[in-house]
Image 1 (cartoon, one colour):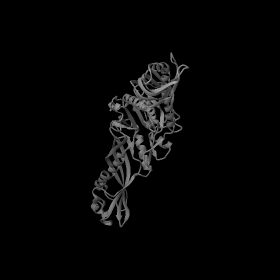
Image 2 (cartoon, rainbow, N blue to C red):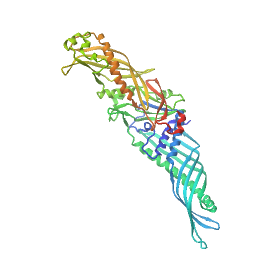
Image 3 (cartoon, rainbow, N blue to C red):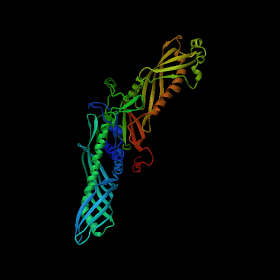
Image 4 (cartoon, one colour):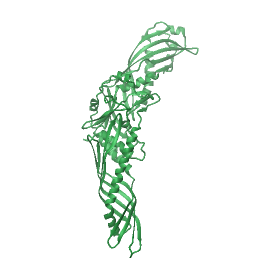
Length: 513
């Protein structure tokens, strides 16, 4: 059975064959880890590639590999040929360009030592210039020149690469590489029959060897370039000015007969923070089972799956809380009259008595990082907050009371292009009076006002932030397509296909969508 993750890594190789080496096809699969990574380090984002993803990656590899190989310049060939009745003819083939390759079939297999890719039955087409000169003591020097075309009727290309986690860095090495030209034909434009036969007899072997050597050398150069690029990839991806995603590659690749996968750390950290502290990771108490995550996306109708542990969401919650980004001043709501003491004169007569007809605002502060847990059908969360009632009197903001809340909510994730986004809905809340300068009052009378503020102001604000989303592992030039969500073992499972970002891109792959 072909191992799909290998195919995706080979897809990376093919992109590096493209003119711009800066293009990385699967950046998340290639991010190097920190210098010291223990084999027991946990990955909070897991990626699984299924058999449909294997076919996608193979076709992508072939298409991009062909485009990167052509045009390929083959070194000049010179040879002296002795032809009966003519004598010794000195022939030169120059400006040899391989400009087209057609592939009939290909296979990818994996084993203990590496990943083997074999392209068989390929055809190739070359153009070249030819020239010759000869002469004897009876015949003065004769020369001529022209162009020729070569058709390679059957060619095989094979390579085996090793891919491993070397002290936290993904290391790529070329184990074997070869190209074999089985059959070719040469067609001259100009010249005479004796020259054509002489070129076929004398140059076929050299043309074969030149093509084989040029392709093998190209592959070897690409592997070296790609491995060098892997060593320089970032350890974090900045999400915004506040947070970064820890994309450290952890543990070894995991293989099965029908799928394969990898893990990254996947936790959010404060921007420019090198790593999550040991205490923070220790307090997560995650019970991660990668094998269980793999089983949850077993449908052959999808290319693969992404498993996101609930601790990823809790880590971004912690980052925003520690950055003091979880407090808001609510001074506008749909019913503006609610933010005036006159509207509260029945509920809080003592407030209206002290501050008649004064405007108000609500100062909302989250008092601890919101905690989320993945349930069977959604994401459940809880947050604690203090809401301080401020009176705006003669240009001064005067706090008059503080109410503590515990709010429970449900979250519903979505895929928007290549980001994990979503929305939250309010389930319930409880409140208690923390302090007051206007005496005690009945909290239940405030419930309609507070609920209005939560549903019309605070939750919409949070949903706007969630709508912007957080980036998922992405493919260069591609986006997740027709994603489906499920929830299991404290994880969000996203089973998905992959599609080009624009219509008509890589048309041969359209059947996969």
